[in-house]
Length: 137
Image (tube, rainbow, N blue to C red; front, side, top):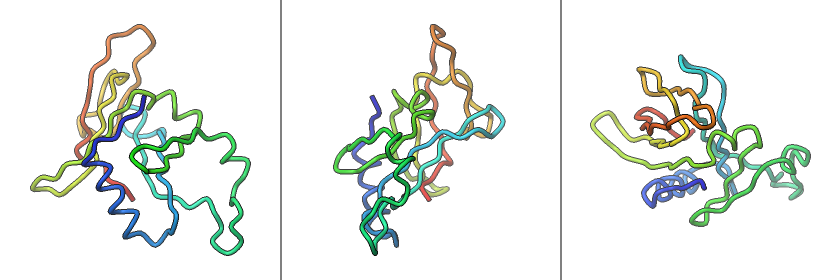
């Protein structure tokens, strides 16, 4: 199951509080790209029209997997879920700044830059990675 560390949850809540998107949720997605094939994408998203209160995109929202972790609403599209089902998200700061770290036992390889990854095939041995450069936004 998807996990978010208390430190990562605190940072997400801070970003939500400071964002210009009232009532935002966290959209977690895996996109194609990078040297190894895939990368994680986190963004704050508002699916409700603040004027009408209506859902902006009913068809997309009805297909999403919706989670709530530590009072954070999270939306994941079905295609991304197979890549993040066992993902652990953490947050840390160092001399280069802060960023979200991803630890995924399903990852087979990671690019030298640490941003993109290759998914392991079922039955293969998994390794864990940390993504030192990913940030929300």
